[in-house]
Length: 408
Image 1 (spheres, one colour):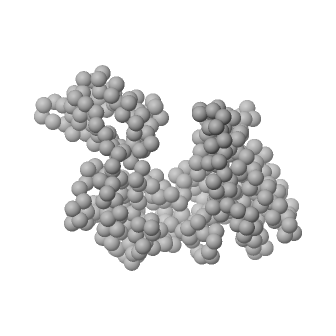
Image 2 (tube, one colour; image 1 turned 60 degrees about the horizontal axis):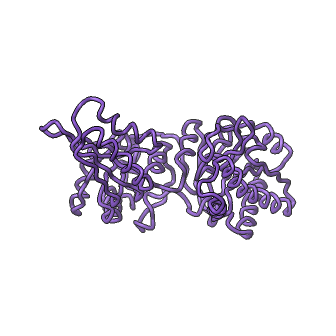
Image 3 (spheres, rainbow, N blue to C red; image 1 turned 90 degrees about the vertical axis):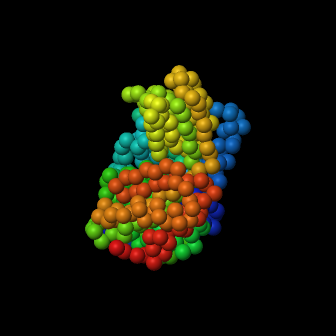
């Protein structure tokens, strides 16, 4: 028998009717001869509701107690789905993260999985039952409930698939696969039949919301094939898997973008060794992630140091940098929240030259100014004025023939 792990997100289990529909889909998989482990999120909106309750009690609730509260959302869903399957005559059993157990570190609200003891799940599967596991949660070494952070149910599903050596991890969501870009921005966006782990990791980290970054890292590290499917329509979805032949890969597989960007500049900084650490060290200590970095050195021995952060971290970043600038005797600090990042992603970049030139030429033709550039082996990102974001996405999508599925 093949073993599959299916994950259903909040919108997929957002009502009693949708949970019943998930039960039918799970039952069909089991009747087709598959062993099935199901991971579910809380019903859509439930986590936000619980957060509001917590903040009504305390504006800064205890992280431990917050995890205890938030974990109840998934507990409701696993019980309801188990009941729905049992009502259809199918043996089913639900487990919380602690009952599996899924052991994590003790970083409440953003815990990382350390170990999964799979024997209890294997025994239940051997008895013919469908196993339903609460996503997003685990338990630390002291027995405290922990949560994995937003999108953690994807990570739970892939980690379980790795621990159980499942044949495939299927992520059911409200879209029918991975697209060349967001269809709401470019209606000609095309669903991809397959995408590599590396491409998906870049797409997820650059703003694509279909899969959570940590789940893709897990899948890539443990070589777990992941298929993204729709909970509401039938179809083959998109398979996320290992790279096969980069020579035959499209030059660019997709255009990712993010509006959640802000740019900060410390101007007139003395140009001397250690200056980057002096600026970025305090930012890192505040758990603020830095993305694109640009340094311009002038003939006068002064430099402008610019980098981007998530928009939600902008105010805190500016606060920190004002103190840093004073210590370094910099000329000043300025910021801009009206920017966006657009990226071209594709493993084909490894074997095809001229991608950057084509990208810059297409943007130039539309008079879109590039403020910053960042590259990796399979990605080129540019920071631009946010008002040009959608135009840039459509322009690059057309420039690389993504609506047609062009290959080199």
